[in-house]
Length: 324
Image (cartoon, rainbow, N blue to C red; front, side, top):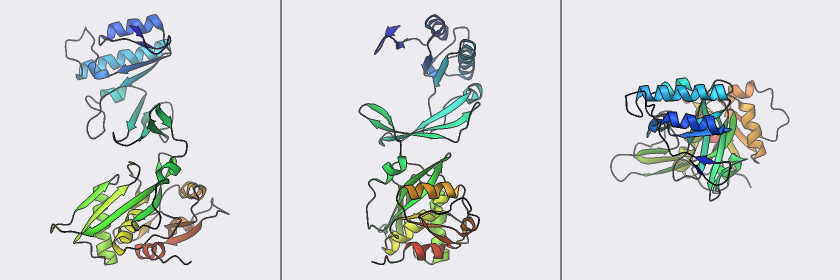
């Protein structure tokens, strides 16, 4: 056992859980971090570290120790390439809380997301920025994600998505170019590929856009992964904007889910999204008509609301020429 970085920080280079438990009982720390559960082993079990029996037993012993000694224990587990917890799922069933620390290795932003919490809500996230001094909290993620947004460029649309119960304004970028390989490519970064293919099909069938020979690329700026259906309309508008080489109406947020008939469907927590958009200085919002009809808790706002029920209406409003 060694001191590291001060008298109150200890490092134990052990994988034998029985020895680690002895140190915890002796030192009685406020916080214990186990890195990682897959390398720990209990000598009384014959199976190898990382097996179902070892993970179950080690996690069970650590959980019991935490509850009996009032010590907070963080157990780190490996994740797969898809981002899910690797190995036996039994670990998620034993612990009280499961937190995922998400972020691309080349992106400076990280999101801490709770997917299980026996004693609280899982609808909150934390956004952090990786700096030379370590992780720093991002107090206003929306402002950071939009800080490098280009002006007067086609294919750029802002949408307010929900991460848990937290509204985030992010930029959707689209690039449409003539295919030279004979097979049009569809690529997305931060947005579901299958959803992108669906939206392209709707634009072709319902709006008459000739996209069959066009390469289409969609990117969510800032390395954020968007799963909120409310981003559908923003993606569709971005693709149409890039294809037609028309800029989106200035200071506009685009919200709405797109159906297969080209209809614009309602989204959740609209008032929360509108207030966040207003706070960041936006003055126009394209939103679903049904949401607008039932909007009762957003009064006296500065946003000019443009309710739409079909995709054609949304494109006509979003891509109209800005009057000087």
